[in-house]
Image (cartoon, rainbow, N blue to C red; front, side, top):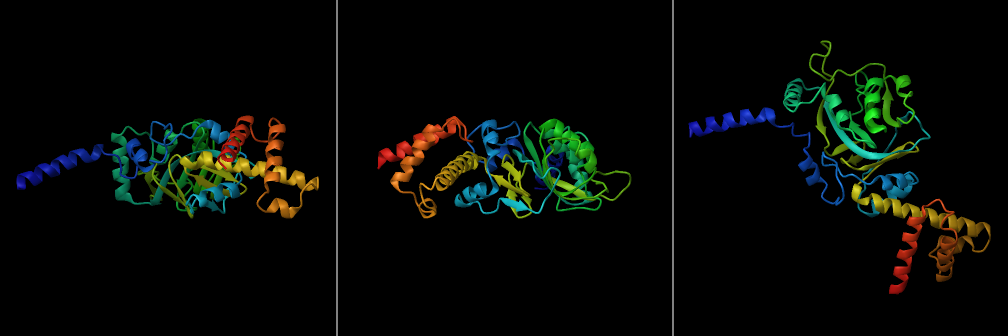
Length: 323
């Protein structure tokens, strides 16, 4: 029995350094955690929502996305209270997540040792940045750390932008604001600015370890919201919402339908063809028929692409034929 225990301990000791830290999810673990996505994936396992859907997401409002997600049972996807570099710009992309805890020296040693075995370069704060793909959004929970907390300045910001061409949702403080503003499309949502900088690696100028990164591509809390790797990030108007990839198309389609309804309704109200009471309630068959014909007549003039409107018309025709 002693020999067996000793052999088991030796096997565990030999295997442990080669194992990734449990919070750094492998592709298989990411796939396991996101089973409702049936489409293409990145090499790291994250769902890869098509670019075409991301393009259509640019016109979706936070209210529209929130309503669709809530109706689907997702109550905790929205967070606000952000500072932004470009308040008028919209952030759209696929989430790559990371999470931190206050600095823990013994755990930090384990994580950095594992990183060397895995061939990772630099400090842990660089590891998720090295994994970014075009149109990704770096989503990081740095537990709101401000003084001595910023792990994103102009150097890391440039690295993020070079790999993703996109921005960040960072629950912490950033530094080097002037340098970050030199990146024209680095649409950043962050908690605060602080001129100090982060010490997150053993041996950093002999300074105390401020925080330890414990997770990459794992479920992540961003304020009151839950974010998963591969979520579609929609940031605009001071708020951010995380859209599960399997619901991205539904969010886009329902937003477009709402947009078409609103344009038609406002037009007919201005024309005084219908009253507010008629437009605000469930539409009569006559109004529905008018709406359908209006879409057909203006299919190439509306702020929704032709294919999407045709898809909407086909669905309406299919429903009508079943009645």
